[in-house]
Image 1 (tube, rainbow, N blue to C red):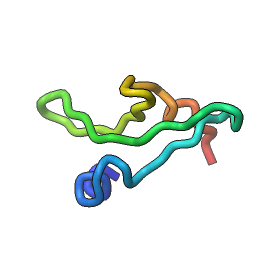
Image 2: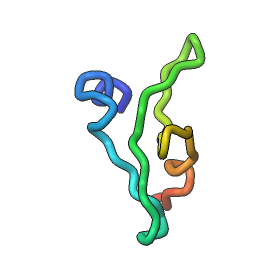
Image 3: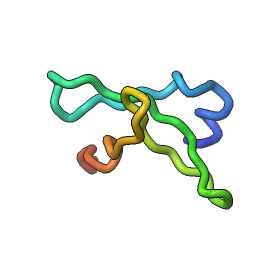
Length: 56
């Protein structure tokens, strides 16, 4: 997913909110200096939308 987002840009992956009445968030690549990871960004705030998704 990191490689896909880096190749296609920060507007290439969208994460819907689990509540369909609420707006979702874009998925961006972040780093802690050693490891790259993905995290959602809604209204310029980092959020945990991905952690709220059901396991399938």
